[in-house]
Length: 249
Ligand code: DC
Image 1 (cartoon, rainbow, N blue to C red):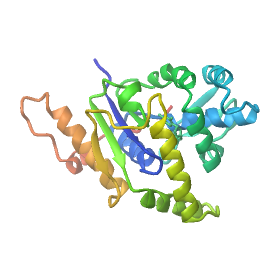
Image 2 (tube, rainbow, N blue to C red; image 1 turned 90 degrees about the horizontal axis):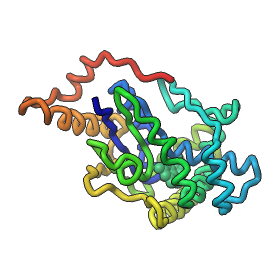
Image 3 (spheres, protein in one colour; image 1 turned 180 degrees about the vertical axis):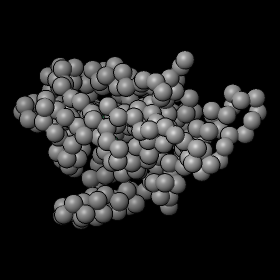
Image 4 (tube, protein in one colour; image 1 turned 120 degrees about the vertical axis):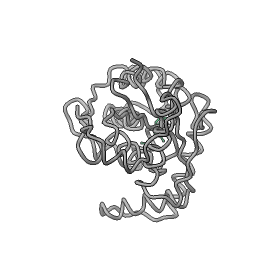
């Protein structure tokens, strides 16, 4: 049987991480947070004092990266790099920026490709990132592209940082987001862009639950296509019937 993949791409702060977690949890599928892989690489490079433009050394590092993801019932996965829990350390703005810089290097992207594809396992995978629908899983039956204004994304990030006790101004965050968007969309290899067959969802005025529900509805429609015209269950009804446990690794 073919293992289905739902790809969820979009810029930083569109909520794709949390939304993808919800969708994977609801379906009982595996989850690939590809941004976390690029972030771990940025952090490992920093720890080993490798310059962020040293493509040879970084692609070697990407091939040998000793990283594991431990999925939890709630929230983001625990990320372990060479035995050290780096779940928090990879979430800083500095490491996000480093991830965006190393992610622009073609040899690095090539080195991480098979590692990302290996996440595709039964019963299914939700993959979130920038090029999931275009490059990593071009045959995915459902591709989603999330958008949100820079102001809305910065406001969400600001709220998260304040909750963590980290000082940041909205203006700074908007500036950083725009810079990162520019690098991610203008790079030559696997730039951030919707796949031609992606469904775009503007998340500006939607909650995480609403976005997850829309994606699940699209998936229901896809899954229902093979059922001789039977209409798919509304998501709420289907949610109540869902006995899948979240996938834990
Ligand atoms: O999704 P995120 O914000 O955690 O990703 C951090 C950076 O990693 C992002 O700015 C660009 C890079 N990245 C990438 O190049 N390709 C991906 N599939 C995911 C992330």
